Image (cartoon, rainbow, N blue to C red; front, top):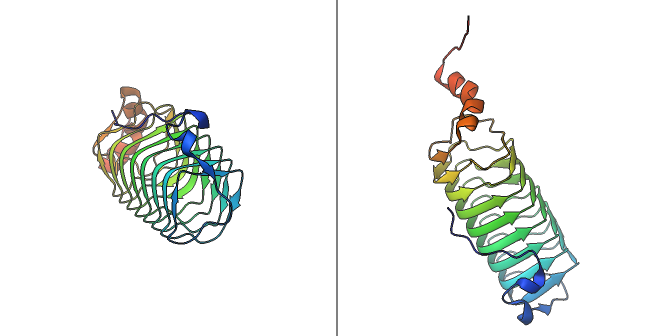
Amino acid sequence: MPSVPAVPDQLAELPYAHLLRPHTGPLRRDERYDTALFDGTAFDGPANGASFLECAFTGVQLSGAKLRQARFNEVWVQGSRWVAVELSESEWQDSGFVSSVLAGISGYGSALRRVVFRQCKLEAVNLRGAVLRDVVFEDCLLRDVDFGGAKLTDVSVPGSTLEEVRLHGAQLRGVDLRGAVSLGLPDGPDGLRGAILGTSQLFDLAPQFAHALGITVKDS
């Protein structure tokens, strides 16, 4: 099982909650943010190269924000909506997203380690070439998420629904798909080497496996 941090549902449960201080003003390039609370605000400007340590985002809307090569360490995001955000080559560690929406995200080449997504919606998210290690998608909807060419190690999807999730050219190791509610994998067996499937899931994917192998199945 992935080794991930315990991600609380409430702000007060964060181990650094008592240190948080409200942030005002825009996000800035290459700025360092320590123990900052971003609450109920909206950001849309460039903040490439910024770093966030022990920060919390609650009810925050990021629309078209630029956070390329930003670093997030022990960051908690709750009830937020991030749309068309540039997160390519960003780094995430020991962080969590709770009840949030990520749509139209450019996250190619990013690195996620010990990150939890809980009750989140990820739609049109580009994680091509990303590196994910010890990542959990719990009770999430993953729709049109592209892991093409990514490296996924010890990733699990308990209670999640996968729709149009692409794994073409991905490298999987210990990726546990057994807890998924449904598996919508248009690439079929391509990219599934290294994944863990349940028996019923294997039966569901059998037609795609047969097609990939050039097998015709007829009962009569």
